[in-house]
Length: 552
Image (cartoon, rainbow, N blue to C red):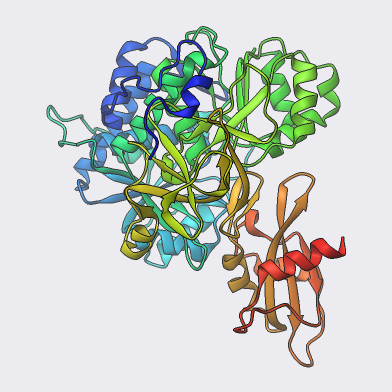
C-alpha cells in the first residue's frame, strides 16, 4: 500500500488536511448535540410547517420512547416506507436513539422486493404515510402477515397537500403516528448504544439475485458525516444559520440521508423538504425562498438546464450546487457554469461507504471525467483485476479499492458475499478505473453490469428474472442504453419461444408493473432471432454489447 503523504494530498486545497481527526459517535448523540446547539433555528420547512431543531429533538425522543414503550429494543428492526416528509427524520433519529435498527424501503420497489427486504431484515414494524398508493401497498404487506405493526403518519398533519390519501382502517396492528406517540415520555436513562452497533440496513441491488443489506453502523454513518465536514473548507460556504438546502433527493437513498440531511444537521442549516422534484418548484425555491445549496442527480440538472426558465432565472442566491448518483453530462455542467458563474461538481461514493468517497474540487484546472480526490480519512488505490491483493501504479487500470471508518463491515445474512467483497481489509468497489499522478481518480468501466438510471442503481439480472416470467420469452439480456433524461435506461433484448407472437414495449411494461420498480422498468425492447452466448453456453452481455457497438 502507499504511504503518506498520499498522492492526492498535494492536490488538496488550503485548509483541508487528510489527517483531520474524525468525530465518531452515535446517531442519537449527533442529533442530540445539534438540537441543543441550534435549538431555535429552523431544521426543516415542509409546506407551511417549520420544525425547529428543538422541536426535532423533542419529536424524535418522543417517538423513540414510544418504540421502547411498545416493547421494541436492541435486536429489533423498524422499516421506514416514507416520502420526504418530517416523519422520516423524526422516525429515523428516534429509532436510532433507542438503539433500534432501521431499514429503508423504497417507494420505487416492486412488491416482491419489499416483501423480501422486510423478511430478510426481520422488520415487523413499519412506519408509512396514508398517501396513496404508498399506503395501499403498506396495507397489502400487513394483510400478508409480513408486518405486525403499521404506524401511519397522516398527511393532513402537515397541512393540505392535495395528494390523494386512503382511509386508515380500524384494524389490529394499525395505528396512526399521533396515537402511537401519545403520552410517551422519554426515559431518564436511554438504552446503551455504541458506535459499532448496526444503525441501518441499507439495501443495494444484488447482481445475481435479491438486494443485499449493507450493514451501516453508527460509526460508519457518523464518520461519513465527519469526513464531509473535514472537506467543507474546500467548498463554497455561506452562513449555516442562513443557508437553505433544498432536500428533494429521496431520504431513503444514502446520498440524501448522509451527504445532505445529516451533514446539514451538524451545521445547523435549514432544509426545505420536497416530496417530489418539480423544476418550477425548484426555480421558485431559488428565486422566492433564496435557497443557497441544491444537491441533485443528473436527471434533475438536465431538467433544470433544459427548462425554459433556466435562461432568465435568478440564480444569485445559490452558492453551491452538486450532482451525484450517476455521471453528469459534460455539456449540462458547462451550460450550468456558464449561466451560474460557478462549477456544478460532485463526487463518487457507494451505499457501502455510507456514501463518502471522493469529491471533485471547485477550484483549479478541471479534469474532465474525474470522480475527484479521496476525502479526508479515506484510503483508495487500484488493484489488479485478476489479483485484488496486487496494487497497481498510477495510470494503470484496475479495480478501485477503499478503506476507512465509513466502510461497511459487510452484508446482512450474506457471509460469503461479505468475504468476497474484501481483500486485505480493503473493500472492492466493482468499479474499474485508475488514479493519475495528482491523486485524482477516474472510472472507465463497471466490473459489474450495473445500470445507473436517474441516479438509481439498476441490476440487469433482477430485470431479466422478471422478464423470463413472460410466457412468450425464451431468452433475454438486459443492457443499459443511453437515455437523454435518465442518463441510462434498461433495454430488453428478447428471443421468443416457438410459436409465440411478438409483443409491444407497453405490453411488457404492463406485465412487469408488479415485478420490478419504476426505476428498473425497461424503456426499450428489441426482438432478436438469437442472443450471443459464451463457449460454455452462457448468455453474454459483453458480446451483445460489443456487437451493438460494432454495428453503430
